[in-house]
Length: 148
Ligand SMILES: CC(C)(COP(=O)(O)OP(=O)(O)OC[C@H]1O[C@@H](n2cnc3c(N)ncnc32)[C@H](O)[C@@H]1OP(=O)(O)O)[C@@H](O)C(=O)NCCC(=O)NCCS
Image 1 (cartoon, helix red, strand yellow):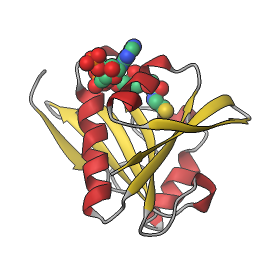
Image 2 (cartoon, protein in one colour; image 1 turned 180 degrees about the vertical axis):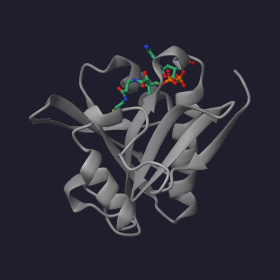
Image 3 (spheres, rainbow, N blue to C red; image 1 turned 90 degrees about the vertical axis):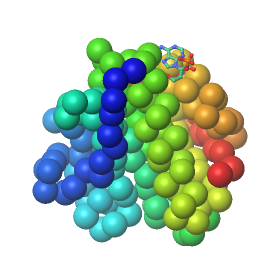
């Protein structure tokens, strides 16, 4: 693994929701709005200045099952294809979990497509467990949670 740093994505740095999902992200405007209102923070892991992984923490969005001051939501985990399986995803994910804990949250939840083996394995490794199954316009997915 190369040397890396983790930085907060500032609104001015990225007019779109995310650097890695790019313009094709259907949630870009929602994410940006949540970041503007302080309900979401986005973090980037960089190697030699290049953005390699991204992950977000959502604070207040009842649609996602958040509970103010208690239960946060883990969102938008991604690693650039050519950097996968090198440990960067796990590092930024753990950074987000530590951040939620620092902010006083005791639980965190997320949603993951049921056939997304890589993400499921990562979340299980981090201690998340499945607490429900659901379905939306994008297909079946698991709701996972973890005590911080
Ligand atoms: C899921 C994702 C973020 C993992 O990122 P990553 O940087 O490759 O993850 P890491 O290298 O830190 O892997 C950490 C652990 O995750 C699991 N994992 C990651 N990729 C995996 C794969 N392809 N198959 C099985 N397990 C995998 C393993 O447990 C791994 O630990 P190990 O290497 O000790 O076995 C990456 O595959 C990705 O960007 N996928 C596309 C976007 C996406 O689906 N995001 C999730 C939305 S819910």
